[in-house]
Image 1 (cartoon, rainbow, N blue to C red):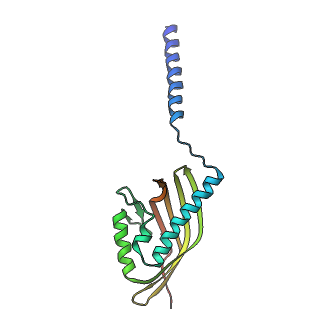
Image 2: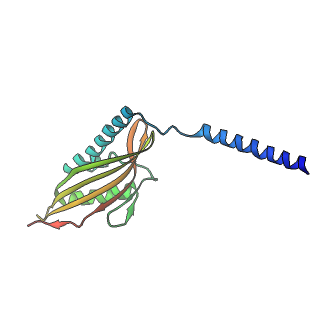
Amino acid sequence: MKIIQNKTALIIIIGTIFFLFLTSCKNEVTELSSIEKETAKKEISARINEIVEGAKQLNIEMAMNPYLDSKDFLIINADGSSLDYSGMKEMNSESFKQMNVLKFTTINEKFRFLTKNKVLLTWFGKNELELKSGEKMKIESYTGTMLFEKINNEWSIVYAHESASQPQLEE
């Protein structure tokens, strides 16, 4: 009986060591150097600027370029609804058609480095818009959380979640 228990214990120990060895070999390197982090921040901020500039020009293609055109893309809107890439593009395209002016202003960006190729960005800003009807509105607090993934050597938004204060009519 004692020999069987020792063999069982030995098998469990060997199995555990083997499992730990296998899982430790598969871990993705997640640490970026300070220089790599700064480079990623600049590249991701440039992608955000594409969105801001595209919105300013009411250019849907430019504004959507940083988002990954994929069936896996998902955005949660400020009203709690969700859309895939094509739904988001269609909704924004229709919105742009109703506007004369759309201006986003970046207040702050906070980066969380998850892996070498995945970064969570929380963007804090505000926006102003003018409808073709002449109505002007401001949204004082607009926050977007975006999961960026480096795909084909380019940072793309694969997931986003937006929150915003109520639009205020300007007089």
